[in-house]
Structure formats: C-alpha cells, structure tokens
Length: 209
Image: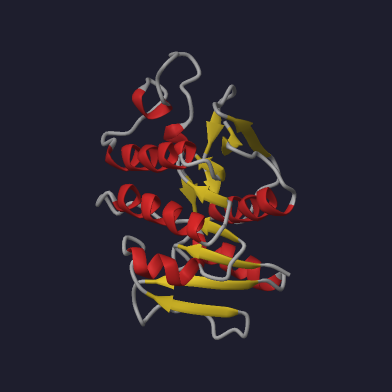
C-alpha cells in the first residue's frame, strides 16, 4: 500500500476521499488547520496541524509520501495561488511527481468560445470569478512545473448519494451538464491515481444535464 499526503482532508470533498484512502489500506498524511479537526483516530492516519500556505508545513505533510491529493478550497482568499507554488517546490525536493488536484469546471476550456475558459464564457453563471481565477492560477502553476498532474474539474458539488451515470470529459464539456455529488468526485480522484488515468490533463466530471 502507498503513503499519500492529503490537503483539504476536513472539507466536504476531502473527507470522503480520506475515508476511501484509509478504507483501501493506505497511509495518509493529512494537513489540518485546527486541533478540532474531527478526523478519525486511525492507525494509518497521521494528522499534521498547519497551514497549506506555509512552506514548512507543506514540507512536513509531503515528506515520506509517494503522491499528493489536494481538495483545497479557495475561501476567497487566494489560498491556492500561494499554496500550490510552495507545494510544487516541496514535491520536487522530495522527488514526488504525482498530484491529483480537485479544481472547478470553470477552468475547463469553453466549448463554443475559443481561447476562453469556461468561467470567462457564456457557459458560466458565476457572479464572481474570484474562486475560478484562483483555481486557474493553481492549474497553470502545475502545468508549468513539469509535474505529473491531473486537475479534476467538477461542476456544482452537491451533498447527495453517489450516482451511476457520470459524465467525464477531458479539457471541455461537449454535452449539457448537471451537478455532481461530492462522493463521486472523491471516488474519481482515487480512480485517477489507481488506474493511472488523465496524466497532465484537466478532466471534467458532472452528471448529465
């Protein structure tokens, strides 16, 4: 079994991914911001208190791991723009090449407006683009860093049971899409790693609209 580092483990997508990794017998290093993290007391889980924007805390969480999963959100504070460059540096120092990063469908290519991302086009219903812009900076950092990334780009995330009919497309959506349960995204993130899929790609995940 492998040892993974997980950022965003206490979040609504990160927690089901953490549970899945532990269920499958892997060791997990989870970086959390608070002592009151609510994560399970598990023999294969190492909880590291710290901040994803702090380079030393990132070094502690990735040390001794073989790959990184990130379910970090932005919190409207440009967290990803700060954290991901530091993370890439520490990955390279530790000779970790693989990262599976959960982003947003807004950073897929627009299907009908060449040269635009989805959040910049008529496909988007966003009133604010702050979060999408932060995710875009993270994606571009990974793309330029010569690491083996997969950026998973879900549509609206919902707290529902897993669905069977899931739409998965590289780089852009060519069909109408609907919301996607978080548990489907967590399972897909694990599948991307274990089945060796979508290297150096953005991949959208949604329900069929």
